[in-house]
Length: 340
Image (cartoon, rainbow, N blue to C red; front, side):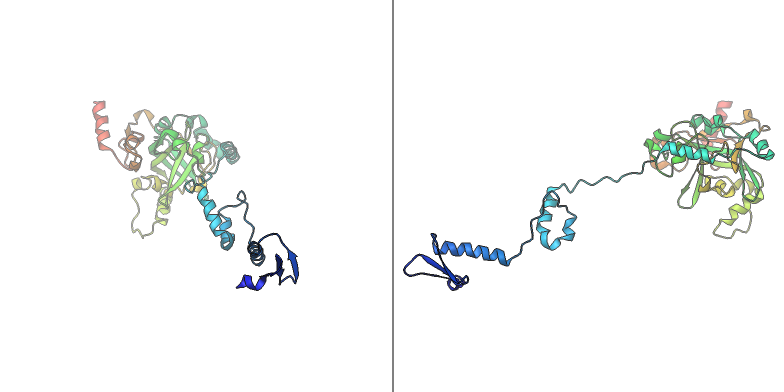
C-alpha cells in the first residue's frame, strides 16, 4: 500500500512520477527496482545507526560503557580473547642494597663511658657471620641484654635456639629465595634483628646469620637480672587476672614469652645487635663454655612443611637447664649413652 501511494506507473510512457518530490523523472529501470532502491534509502534516513567500533580499539571494558549499542559486538570480541589467561599479579620488588644502606643509618655506636664499657663484652659482627647451625649452637650460654626506655636493664642467658637455613629450608620464611617486606631483615647483614608476629598476637625474636636468608630463632632464656620487671611485663599482657607470680624459669621459657618479658616487638626490627644501644648479646666470662652439653633435636611447630624438614635436628638447647621450653628425653638419653 505504501509503495502504491508513493509511486504510480504512467500509461503512455515509461515515466515514474515521484509524488513526494513533485516532479517527473525519466528512468531506464523498472519501477519496482526503483521502489526497492528508494525504500532502502528512506530506511537509512529514518534510522540513525551508530558507527561500528574499531576492532583494534575495542575492549571488553567498553561493554559496560556502551552496553545498549554494542553488547553483541563486545561479547563476540570477548570470545575471541582467551578468557582462561589471567593477568599475573605484580609482586613488589625489594632493593636489598637500599635495605642494607638503611641498616647502616640505624647503627648506634657507643658514646658515653658506660656504653663503651658495655661494648667490651658485646659480640661483634664476625661472631654472627657464621653458618646458621653453627651460630645457633654458639649462642647457647651467651647473655641477651635489653635496656628499656626507663633505664632498666634486663639480662637472660640463651638456653634454646632453632636454626632456619634460608632458601633451602622449607620451614624458613625465605624458602626458595622468597622476598617480602616482612622477611627483609633475614637478608640483611649478620646480627640483624628480625621480629615477626605469629597467630596474630605473639612475637618471635630472630637473628640473621651467615648464609643467604638464614636466621636463628631464640626459643628460651634463663632470667638473670631484674626478674621483677620481667614479671610485670608478663602479667601486664595477660587477659585473665593472675593471682600469683610466674616461677623464675617460666618467665622466658618460650619464644613469645621471652619477647613479652623483654618488651621485644616489631620496633626492634632491622637494628644490629653489634651496634644498637637498646639490645645486644655479650659474653659471660664466668660461664664455663666447655661444660655445656648441647642437645640436638627437631624443631617445634613446623610439621606442616613435611617430614624431611620437620624432623631435621635443627633445634639446640642446654641439657639440664630448667628454662628450656620443651625437652626431648629420647635425645637426652642418647646423649647420656654416648658419654658413657
